[in-house]
Length: 503
Image (cartoon, rainbow, N blue to C red; front, side, top):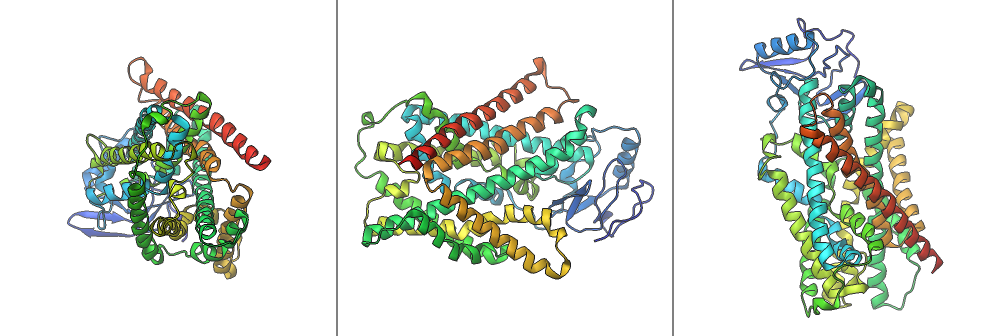
């Protein structure tokens, strides 16, 4: 994949193309400042940074190209009037609205829903209901901010779509002059945040799987083993599952995982609604010191911002993603409703003995034990899919340093070492509840709240923030909320982890 030696010129376009119905598809990456291009079919590069996406750049009409050229020559950065990124996306295998809705639901309705009763235990029934709605609204709004900025920035730099790190980089690169030096740092920051979110999220899954198997085995045998040994033994199935690179080989595992989690959730709700105690026996509002744990847990359970832009970028009608009702609003309304219901009734059922996952509260019956095993297997089977995000990020950082002769073996060794790393971290912190809160406080508050707010503030610097700078005020409030969640949630989670070690 070699660099093209020529620099982009509007009167001479160099690249691979085909003409069909007066459309020209250029498989080249371009920048509005006249930068080097790479001859790649599915990757767009910004300052040497790869943005993987399925779209190729379509330039359909000659007059549109001429207007774009004139606009660039005039030095204008806002090209909304001349370039609509939706028109230039390759929609050969685009996802319809219903498919995008299902993708969003699948990415959000995971095992995090099983932790919602624990969130309500830390908030109380009334506080939990309103808190879940508020957190759901904030998470949804932050996704709106990120997608809207990504679309606007795609117009500015004339690219069909941008990923999360590329959106952050482009915001700074096309923003005010004094902040442009932070463009590369912003790309690195979001990449690191994505890595940490998915990597430590997988570590939480390791603890959950081990805890589930430990409980089932000890309920039916006289065997008693330290939870850390269960975690260590998990490395045996995790490494072969986690090193699978091609996602198509993970499809059967994902299908089984989805079936297992849906069956497990249905049976869990069946046990939850049996003989519900009076809600007056539960806390309506808990001590204020526990609230950060509530917010951190709900963030961990509900936040799925890392998958949003890939879904929006692949849509047949991306203009249907936002708006009212819009694909995003429908999906998040369903998520908030289900998460709130499971959290509310799960806490009513089990009260102060609620575990980090409600499945761990189920009775030792054959049906309930099968649920624990199936849910644990569903997480085990999706481990490889979730692990592909941090592993590919890491490989892009170190892959070029390994000789071509050892590229394949180097990749798999790196992936195996990273998988074993999640096991080691899980052994260090084998307590599920504070670990979930810690990951939510650190990773999801940064990625889901702080980053979208900063990106929007920079993106609209020249556009204006509206009357009384209301947009900027809102962004600052969200940044402060994320910092508060980060500091308070981390402090309380770490305190609980220390107490666990004291015991």
